[in-house]
Length: 453
Image 1 (tube, one colour):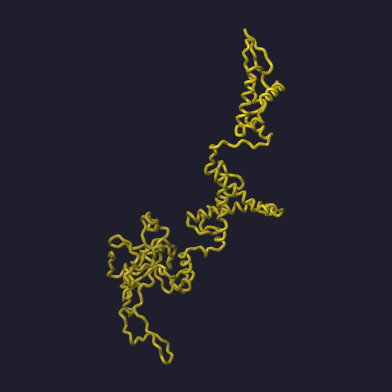
Image 2 (image 1 turned 30 degrees about the vertical axis):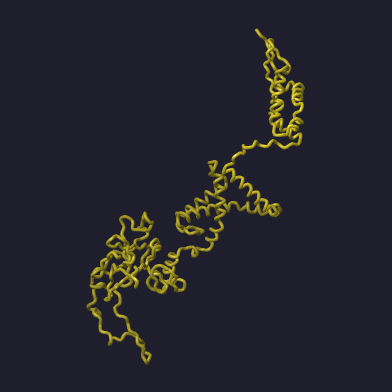
């Protein structure tokens, strides 16, 4: 049976081996210095360590020595002196030497994200230094307190900017203080509510969301000024040309064929403008009558060079048009020739209501939706005039007019021979048109639309 008796601090070879090992580890952390510097710092290190252990025996666990002489040493110098690296660092500081430089070839890689953070820190530091003369004044504290009181206003503005950017980019809406329709206004209201809740620190359940809010705030701050300037300019400054033209037509004509013509840029047609223009007014459709004043349908129109005459240009085919005496907005559609090609010079053009269109997959142009059909547009006259009055100047100042003695009576002038219902030939009017519009009948014969070229 063996017994173990407590002993004092470990002695003999075991004790000095522990001290020497700790001293060697300290010297290893001084290896970057010159040999003379290492010698100066670590000279007599083992003796100093051993003396410190002897002077403070209670601070270390003791060694248990068995009667057989085997030492079970549990001495821990790290518990008394700390890690060897820290001890070496203290020696450097006591001697006024710089800390150990990192080993060559082991330069840490910060990556793209770290590089961006470093760049942001540098720019932020430079920006703060630039404004330091201003921000260090007592007046700046008052200004900052004032803007801090306006923080809720910024929350609302941030929501408005975010909603306006989404509607402008994905919905085709113009920049305005309030969107024109209810659905867009609901989106705007939802964006403002979310922005306010984010500003209050609410509705941010995920860890990444506060950082995303900062990015959204920066983007909103960049867009706030141009969006606010555009919205304050009023709706007339950012409507499309087609919308402005149609508004001008309705304002000038009162929604009818009468009234003064609407001019573009003072009645001068812009250079290179597509379509057909009459007296500075863009024409949306053409209506052809024969020599007897009867309407003729499906007529191809070409100019003096053989080019198809189009009232609806390539870009205008994607825009809605307002038609006098017909409610709503309309998209004109081409006629298909015998080979299937589209003919935009076959008049009068037919149209489909805005609510009855869908968008073609190939080019996104509005076309009649499945199950719907195009409609005839109202003609300006049921029967065109066949006589053009001749004007004569008289010596006695008598009013000019038509001289009935020189003009033979045209057939059909007798009211007894006039067709019934006010239509040529007494035929039933065509009713494939918007409600409330009566169209003239199809003339006989009707030209056949052939493929051209």
